[in-house]
Length: 427
Image (cartoon, rainbow, N blue to C red):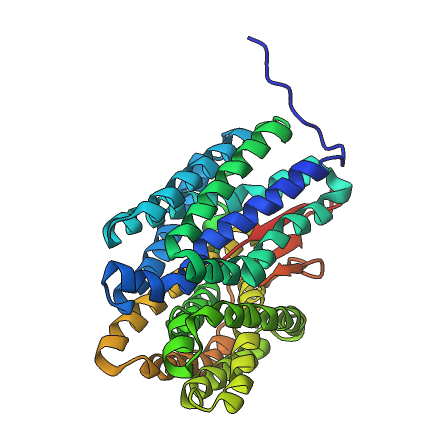
């Protein structure tokens, strides 16, 4: 039986890599667009904002629980075929969300998408490097992950604006169409790639025996819980507490994302000097920003300053937590990064759940204060974590780590090749 033709690293994969970048944009927008749509869909489906917020919890917990397993099970599937399947499933899930008659069907649609999202992130960067060749792998990976930045800055806010103008169902319908288009483009322009070999995780899993590593992962859970207890309900906060017109909320979310680019830049540089020190500094800024945003919500001129602090710290903590956890690992940098992503998703899910439970009893303003209290707990845990001893000193080289986006760090781990990127994502 003749074998399929396979692509070799020629450095001429610009078109397929660009298509992967747009696919990344669609997938990340699918994940986080729901944050901007919560008020509208809660009103139409006649559910509380708290109940709608649990859609964020469902997505995050699904990624956390099923991501590593499904990525491993599908690691043998040829990449072009895998991406086409993933995007077709995203098209179906977004179409189902657009037609959902109730919260349960919408939850099913979100669950289906969440199953395949981590599989895409586990393979997209590797595929980009293979398409471009070793000498251009770094550029190729950074190009793919520009799709994440574009989604955070443009996709989610513009989707929110479209939902206000035409209805939230139209936003999901547009994502369904884009997913289908990306599947068709990948099928047409991406070459068939060589099958990757499977990797054993038993040896890498030894990092779980290191109490300091486990403590750092736990710190990430606490930080992301604090972040998403408030961020999940940011759109509703802007409408209800600040008094922003629903048609303007998308622009404010875009501003939050633009501010976050500054935080991403600051966090990526601060973490090199002192991972725990950078964590403590930005957790303080985060807490101040969240609490002051609530207390000053009615004072429009004064609200802008804590809103900026919140946006900077929120985004800075993504790369800080990622690099902090990877640095403390004695080996297995890829697994360390993946476990931190799982921790982040656990925090995202817990934050959405906690905020949803708090709002009916104490009101929307309590969410910001509770999130700040969790940030204080994270701050108090840092001195104790600093005193823990690792079972084996870190020997890896993170000098070649580059923060591509708020949720993505790439590290060159191999000295035998020009660049062997290890990518870890949130989300």
